[in-house]
Length: 325
Image (cartoon, rainbow, N blue to C red):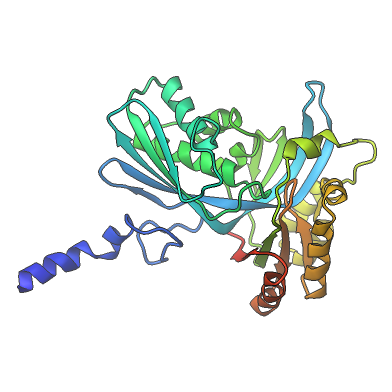
């Protein structure tokens, strides 16, 4: 009996539990890393973490000759995560499952696009079953779909031992979406061009983040169609970058901004009501992320963040308290 109990104890050690649980990893676990994603491999199964992002700064520099807008942005990752689990199957197909009923589970899903891109590029006939555990709100400006695609690329790079560099993954990811290159790297980064140029920034910014997602989505394409580069509000990304590098929280707050915020608020005035309520509750700053509609507040203290959370829960259904990672 004692031998039997010892075997059971060995099986239920933290190392084995890491493969069967979802949610935030315990820092004692061998697969926990401050940012470099949860990574496990066991019997041809890979689990990869896909963090959400927020824009500390988003500036529309101008319009390019190819019709795309020139962007300059600073993004940071926050600890609100989706999880991708990938298992090889015999049939040459990609099957996507999810706990979310709001997602397409076919070729329109960015996870499926990422898997198909790698399969076709490297002529891999092995099939895949991909389970997407969603926690990041959909169509929220938090980069959930892009982060899921990036996590899929990272996971398959390991599963199939492709040995692709980060730069190669970024080149592939850009074919899926303009936020995917950033999500390949994650952390704090300066993004420029159409989204394909990513420069990681050392960042020791410590703050609580309260995310509020209203009960509607925003079409990024629709917002970008309304941009007038002559009149759009501008954000001093260079000054924001310097504030981050010098670790000046007050200067970061001063230079944060989002060129798309006025355009989205004009279409959805409720976003301004969220910002006003956050400010009234003591947020250090409130700002829309991406093209919206999610608004985030930064707070130096958890007490103030809790006050905002309690106030916003009676205002919107999707409220999250997270940290910058």
